[in-house]
Length: 319
Image (cartoon, rainbow, N blue to C red):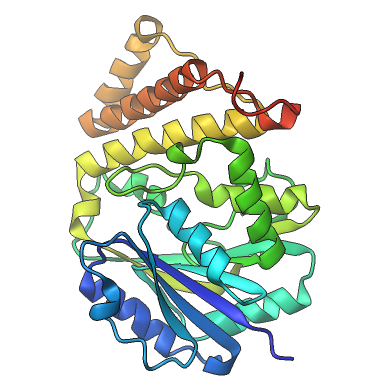
């Protein structure tokens, strides 16, 4: 029996040009349509996408509307609706290489020890050229390029975590991901939700795989292009992104590994931060400050909600 791959494309008010190129890259896949299905998850878009986007070119394509806003609800809906044994998550600004699905299916079949894996090459296509001070922060836009396969089964090896763009997951791991979210009870602080720049949700797939005794990894055979609009290259966007990233990961790392967010004193660290600003510029200083504020937000959230690490065996939320 031919392996059925489910491509889950989650989108909220997409940029038409970007979504058009994402769909075109799926049209160009060298894996025959009989071997994969396409689920376009319309996540509470202002106008229903089924009315504007024709998927008739694919015999196994479906429009699915999910009205609860957020990447996590959209992905969970996709997992529930998918029929394949391998689930491939694609963002609405990803242009997959023509062999992406074929390589993913090959990895699935010859690497049964892997529960989750993804692109080792996520290259940018910028709508406008990034300024020099922005360039050190570009990896935050989920860009990477590795020269060789890298995998692990220890969640401390975060360099091997596959990211959401082109993320490939075995069905049992996707089910375990959904269960892990229920145990954490803090889904509101993980994953994008409208204009909120939260993150961390992608990492949970690797944690779920590790809990099942499976590995996770990234592979240069899997490549795609990330279409990056000009508004994501502004200083203000990165400051918000860094703060949200630090907050989400601060909560998640506490919940999963018992690692409390770093406690930092403004007065004690003020000289170091000022020196950093003098040497690296005002924007770099703002990035440092945003990360500190995110970690502080995480510490407050943990204390206010009386959270417990799930690994301790205690419920995530204190009574």
